[in-house]
Amino acid sequence: MDAELYLDYNTSYHRLDARTKILAFLAIFIGALMFRNPIWMLPTVALVFGQMLWARSAKNLMRIRFVLLVMSVSSLVLWNFFSNGTTPLFWVFEVESMYYAINRTLFILSVVTMGTILISTTRNEELVMGMIKLGLPYRVGFAISTSLRLVPTVAASLATISQAQRSRGLDLDTGNIIERIKKFLPLLVPVFISSIRNTNIFGMALESRGFGARAERTSYLQMEMKTLDWIVLAVALVYVVASIALNLAGYGKLVGLTNF
Image (spheres, rainbow, N blue to C red):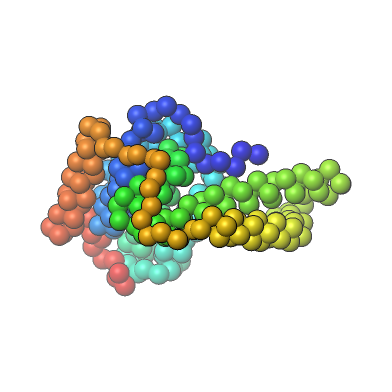
């Protein structure tokens, strides 16, 4: 099982500075928050889709396609219960609440896609160094780096344990969804024990190397902004400023939507 999320492609998006990709992610997040009408979300969706094609990160999105499907269906249903409109549609749904649910679903998918693009095109050490260069404290950056490393490690451990149990005759592939979940629950015990053991060893390794002994640190990784980085940042800035300006001008709102 390939648990790594980074895709080693030699695209120009991969070669962008990590700070550029982080700020592009934040720009999409801020800009998408400005609109409630799903029609006004379409330019954002197109921008995200273009970046996905540019970065060739669709492979990782396909890996989580079932999660995205569940998130989409849940969002389309639940947001109708948390918002109200004035035009009845059917049952407890209104036209305005359905439009708002579509908008929030597009927002969630856009943010998840941008996050996937970010981790698919940026190595772990580059991502953390980019956060530190943007002003994040080193300890916080190191904690984020560690958590990102643990996710594929735990996933690989679960895959290894599952394969070992299958070789011993455990059937994990038949039955309905409830039965399959029950079969996977006993596998979580060795996964958690392995994770705790590895965390303890990792902590002792940090202490033996004097982690945090000095306030100032040096890094072998050097980052440099290039022309393409400034172009991408300029586009991101224009997008954010335009989104905020349109929001202040009253565009992108849903007439008839209540409780929001």
